[in-house]
Length: 317
Image 1 (tube, one colour):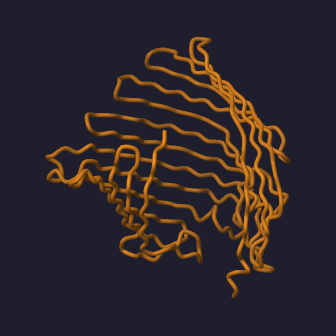
Image 2: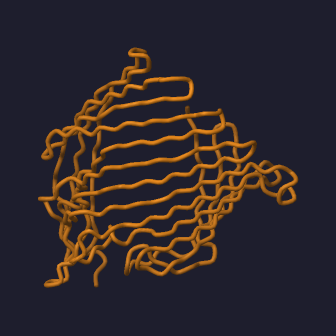
Image 3: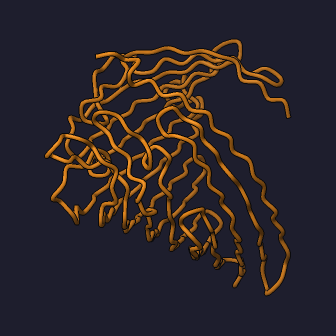
């Protein structure tokens, strides 16, 4: 095959602005504002397109007591070709003591199709100009706890998605076509542990330890298709990071990642990063997949093996 055949050249332009105001009324804090943006694309594959986004947003935070806070708000957005929609949400938090916070929230969200999903075209992939926007209803409850040098975050959540966009295989011609999947509901659990270490831990070699774990379970409400992405989600995701300080004020991090996807072989990788901070810039070198593991996150698309990058980050503000 000729790789140049699949070469795509895109030129995109995005501009916009946002106005926001905050005031103290109704026993709390009120925030509201307006936003406007426009994006354009010129592409040898996708064509020439543009769309406008405009919207209003407002949020009211009510301090019921020193321990109990409640906020309610919403976004009213209008996208070209998708019309006006309103997306509400609320958040409730309770802190019986300074080190403990319990919270719950609810929200509605959306995602409009990308230009690729709408217009892309090659011998095995076909966009769909009739795609609808994705919509989801999200529920979450959790707890944050801080005890001396240990921080714990735990969350249980559920996402009820409709019209989710994915590439679906048309078995008659072996072409992947962008389409709206009827429903996929996801229930999950997240746990985060953060330890600030002292000289007595790990012989003083490491300064911080982070452990993050996520579990996801999705209901395949519609199963008569072969999906490329939506139904190939993570089931278990574990990340363990260690941070240590080297001579000459060089900071190093080590990260162990383990991923287990629904229908792909589980895998793990190890990454490391070295960084030296100066007054307004830092120099870094990062090595990913140190053990040169072979793995996939999308069926049939192997990810890179070991790779090393370095650079300089400048802070001008």
